[in-house]
Length: 205
Image (cartoon, rainbow, N blue to C red):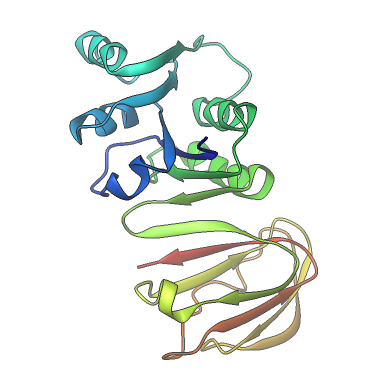
């Protein structure tokens, strides 16, 4: 029984074949069309679908094992509803493909998904997830394709950074501080991060 979920919220250039066998595929809005265009069946289509045309909606219905149309007037965002659906089904890991949009408020929602819902968010150029408090290793071999490494605190956090270009010891970060932005790897060295609170890490190409 699969317990991993990939939520696709937008059209993108990523290869989904890596995820198809071991992840349930949840489509949100135009992410449903992305899954279909790559030749895959949607396991769960969840959205209010206010960003698709009628003929596209029919196509989504035809290519979904389960179709859930949300009310336009609801308490949670479509992405949040998809995350909740994944956890209701026993998810042990949730990934989400999402891109920045012209709506800044929607972009901020990804902070909530990462920090509260333990979702790893990524696209062609970036990946973000939550590091738990304590000692974390940022592996060079795994993330070397990314140019910038940003640490974004949701809570007041004390951070120590070793083996990255910019090192600090016991730096106190206020919530939403930008003081730990745009770090980077030293060649072939794993970064060592220690914090007293969970913190979001963002890798950017």
